[in-house]
Image (cartoon, rainbow, N blue to C red):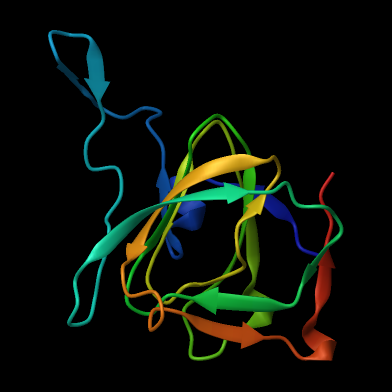
Length: 164
């Protein structure tokens, strides 16, 4: 399979979630004008009986290409934020919400300039594809054991992702 990697924007990513960015966003000057505060950048969703969320830090290793794409996962009870600590680039490989992912509808986005993403609940995605060794803040449902579904590809569905 040969997929085009698209530069992410609010419009082309909206069926999968949100682009988290402060570009062209309004802010409040707080703390005697020493801080620009950008409020409400993502719609954090926690569903089910237990509404507790968790804030995590992922230390991600730089991915080596070609990268074997052999599974997708989703989080049925929460959105999931990935926000890098620093200005870094990562790829997001997603498929629309469905009982089983439609591999013909996979899309791949490049996220740059320290921007982040917030996957909607139930959106199929490949785990974080960091292009650098980097740290990311993540936010999702605290009960992680029940908040994950994994679809492992059969042999005929596995493909390699190249990035230069």
